[in-house]
Image 1 (cartoon, rainbow, N blue to C red):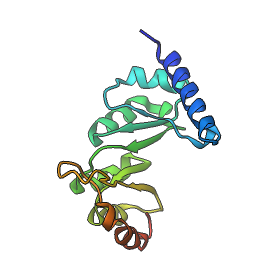
Image 2 (cartoon, one colour):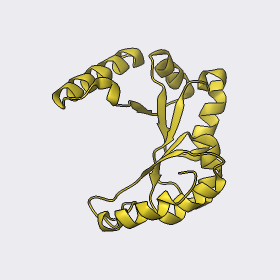
Image 3 (cartoon, one colour):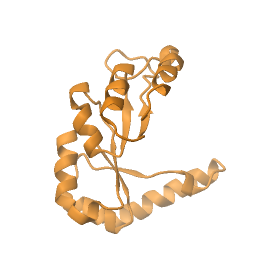
Image 4 (cartoon, rainbow, N blue to C red):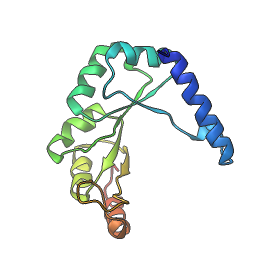
Length: 154
């Protein structure tokens, strides 16, 4: 089995090759390591291997892992990468640096109410238009984006 350090190195090489094929610098790509099934020791090893961005799909799991990391949390960026229920909006803005799964105007507005300063969010688009998936339908994205741009902290 490959060590975390070796795995991170291999992933960075693949990113570099893909970026080169696309005519972009590798530095333009952000590696976000999914921490959703990783224990804190594995996250520590990833930090030691140079990973600074971590994604988690459960608010409570991220909160626990971040607390256990203690001072190692400094210098890392945590992304909410899963479906975010609006009743978890308040705690999510306390835990995560970036919310990658804003799937409705209502959720975006709710996040904005709890934010004290601007925060990076990504809008989730249901490109396949599958009923079982979350996100904006492609045809409603422009209007939703315009409405969310009025939020002061998104």
